[in-house]
Length: 397
Ligand code: G3I
Image (cartoon, rainbow, N blue to C red; front, side, top):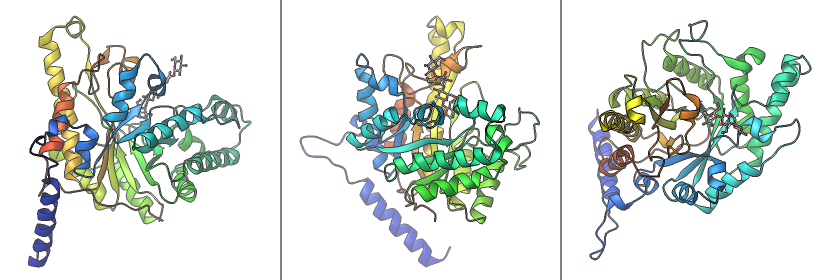
């Protein structure tokens, strides 16, 4: 590296260190980072810490703790379900905005940013749409027009109020699907072909020039073999690079981060390397749905500490790997958990045989777990030269 470049890097690092180390302490009240929320600690790095929000829990008057933590602990929120097509347009032509509006209002009142989730996904599509396609009453041309209208309607309604949109979600198959060679999967690819992906980004951009537009998927935390036939991260990387080359307005790639303590998972360097390869394309990155589930054995369910403790520790380590990797990439703009309490998590309802759970930062009684403390410590102790403030990302035209 040339001397001038080194000097510039050193100057940034020193200036950053100065900012990060400016502690809001007074003689009577020493600075205590452990007393700050995740959101406040994230701000030291320009990193937003978010959560998916269950709107029923948020509205439940008998559940004040849920509302209080959602408001105070996080600097960004995502709708867990209420911005999905089946929730927004349960009957054809009749949009029901109440719950999505309520989330956006909640965020505004609490000074939080919003990740919009999700414009195009093969799940939670309204029944009238899938049955219309199945019985032939909705043609391919009409389907494409319905998708364009849906994206335009939703993005326009929240124009200027959504920071990042998950435009396309989970478009790529997994190695355990049939055929095992990775491919574009699901309802939209089947009926419109993979061209719907570029279309969706272009329609979203036309409706909101200022939102950052993301592709979002799971099992893309690290690269594998490098062969796009069986390495999903490589497949998504190649797709993003192609979209960019075609001038499609994609601004970021979201890595969901659904992990489990029963799997080998990745170390911090592997995850950092993946984020940096995506951001080297000029993209923002984000962890968008982090949780770390565990098998609930008979011992766990009976309260056996020897079975519970290793799970809590492995969960903390995995939450922390993703947080450290995100901190290490200046283009990783946000770290969002998919629910923050085991009282409201999609995991137990989905993984029943064998049962799984314990996936979030707080237990069912809203007691913070070790995972919560570990990611806080990552936010407290990280700094230059390896962790620098976030880079600025502007929406691509
Ligand atoms: O609202 C109905 C309720 O009226 C009914 O009585 C009940 C009976 O099953 O179902 C309720 O709907 C459930 C809905 O969540 C709201 O709780 C659906 O059955 C259930 O399938 C749905 O699950 C959601 C899942 O996406 C659907 O695939 C989860 O809450 C949500 O966390 C999950 O989120 C996804 C992301 O969008 C994309 N990435 C993966 C992630 C986890 O699967």
